[in-house]
Length: 465
Image 1 (cartoon, rainbow, N blue to C red):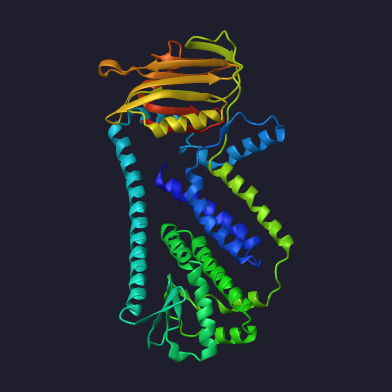
Image 2: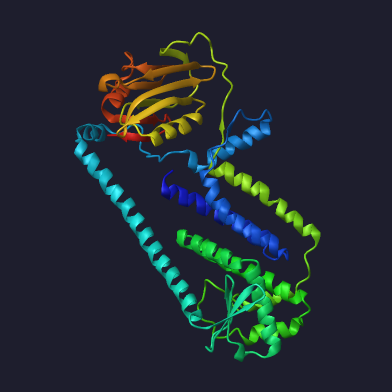
């Protein structure tokens, strides 16, 4: 999968699931559930785009079929890049196109690739800056506890110093200046940070920091990171108050220590998250059990995202006419306005074959690659099956590419009035249209071209138009 497309899918999943959290769950006091849900957003964002596309026989329920078809139709991810152009160009433009030398086409392609490469370098450049900032933060955390007093204390290590910075925890280290606080405030801080340490909240922070570096271009990730950290503070605040600490005294302590907070974003700072929201959550009522029902709404959101990101291919049952058993030209009734041309030769890429299969499935045409082998980046052998239910029986064409020679495989579907002419096999069909012959012999190097009756051209593969 292309890295750019993968990152796009990751950010769509992340933004959608976080939107569901923000709308339904952010004000609920099920803090531990929210913690796992927020972490789940990260893992689902990374996982859903690499899951296999949903394939099956489909449901007999017309409503389910319609929903599946609609999702596949609106999803942009089952479609290769489409280049739209008028179907019937002017004579002058057609003449210019036919005279255009291949070198000019290659130059245009190179220029477009340069823009893509530039965007890649910009992304990697900013990613590198964020990574070095991340390393700098780690160095700051280790520097402040270096050569300080390390005192073991009930499952964690207290690092005592004499600097004027607020207390924070990082993994099992609790860094604090005990001289700054009286006994009551010191007890509150230790109880608070102990929760962060025991529940390994530092892992959450490092994970969301890594995600923010990967998805730095998505503004949602920065809000998402804030809410991950805020929820960790909710967890620690609730645990402290459950020990019997006076709520008002604890809140005043938060306000007292909220000024002049330095930037230690990789740590669990005692007063790091927005104080107003933390105090508001402490004063809110416990969430009722009915609030748990909100989590049930997340499952259809996840399922819908999966269907959108990796749309279902509905495999129709083969009910083809048995009279269509041999490769070659077929005359059948009109069913589509699109003219389709496919050329398979050694230069075709695996991604192009996958794109062809996905696109044709939308037309109820099933293009199945049963076997293929590549040698030094070139296709050396392939076995392809083509089927159009009720119109063209499943037919297989195979090319072994012996002695370094690979005979191209062609598929053409041309509309001629109320008939369609279909050809699937080797060699240019004898009675193909002049325009189709030019496409197969001059314009389409490998891949597929769909010329739409209503206007527009879809192309995937290597071509020279």
